[in-house]
Length: 78
Image (cartoon, rainbow, N blue to C red; front, side, top):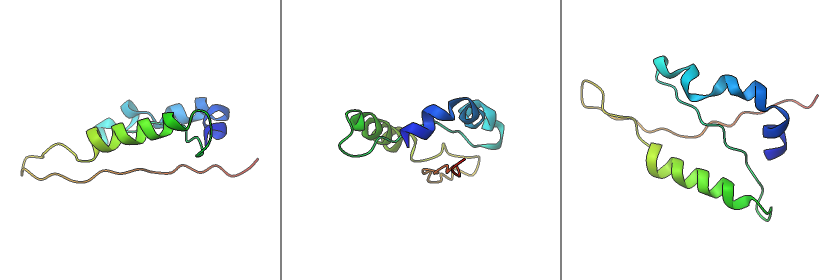
């Protein structure tokens, strides 16, 4: 949810790409705007870019590739 994204932006910085890259985990935080919101196209743009560019890993030493996907981060209401 875009409201959580803006409220927790500093906390979410810990999930950014460089933080777990040595373990093979890269993360990009995307605010999710609901359908009908004036910035909904931003959410769709990020999803589309992710699916087109980052759906598969690079081949490993055995020439294997693996699918990537989305993780949803949920915060409990305070």
